[in-house]
Image 1 (cartoon, protein in one colour):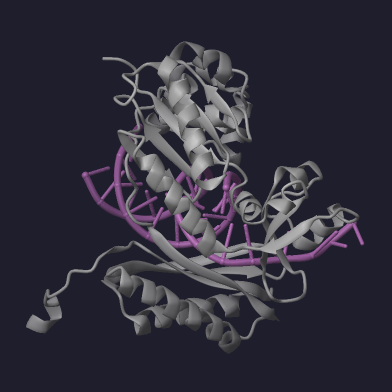
Image 2 (image 1 turned 180 degrees about the vertical axis):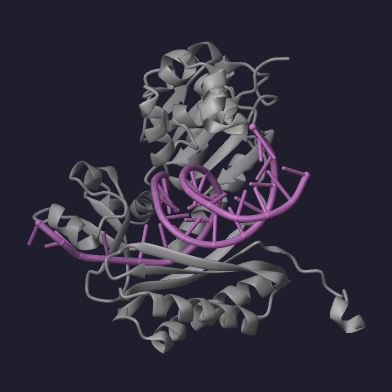
Length: 364
DNA sequence: GTATGCTTTCGGC
DNA sequence: TTACGGCCGAAAGCATAC
């Protein structure tokens, strides 16, 4: 038995890079791909930017106006997102990559894990060659660059991929894990968010190296058995999560920006009813039923709130969905003194609809 | 005392 | 000086089950 060999492939500044391939003349200019909200000329946020723009201070999530300010007096190009195109390019690449792997797992639109253990006989030497070949193949087929991390598991591969980008390739062999891991801040580990980071800092754990040296039993005392053991293992680069195809999304949501900030219920429901219809159509198309209905609101001050309710009986009915959304917003609007800027609907607890099965009630 | 489930918030892309 | 998307899964925090 030898180590697994896992590759993480991460497409570089994906949306902006796709735009560059469509129009190569913009490649040496700052390129900013934006989600325009439609509320005013430049209201909206930056989805992603190429490295030319990043060097000048543009970041994902930034208001478009702010990005424009940072790039004034440059020949920057601002483009609206073209999600259909990115989905298409992504699907083409993912289908290529699938053939390079013993098993395959896509994460988001621009990342994928490949277990290539059998493919290369568990030899890290050959991993470099395979990674280069993969990069070349993606480049030939789509003109896109990517960054690749290779390691004995998903956790190590992910951290490896972050070490050099764009167009990077980093291989971390099992015996190199400690050297790469120990200086990294603990929040490089999944499941270490702001709260956990803070908690760890009070224990004088600041780097993954600190975590690795920390007594396991103490970790378990503080974080519980599951999480404590997870942290202990992760700090040593131990991770046994398999690379496996992901099922369908666990939730479907729609959110959009209102024409103006409001506390008016019918104005809000006009928008959310449209969203419910879209979600319902998607549920129908995929023959799914839902168990939990949620609403999302972004307030005037950009703070985010949400409410949800789980149903006794899962449903695929539009009238039920719209009804629950209405009730949730009714309550929410009366409780709120801050106006709503953006509103959304989210359904989760999705399951396959059992067709041709009589409802229990039909027997009563 | 730990696991699980539910709701809300956070954060990556 | 301010400015501000849409979507997803993970994390957090609490209640209840085992």
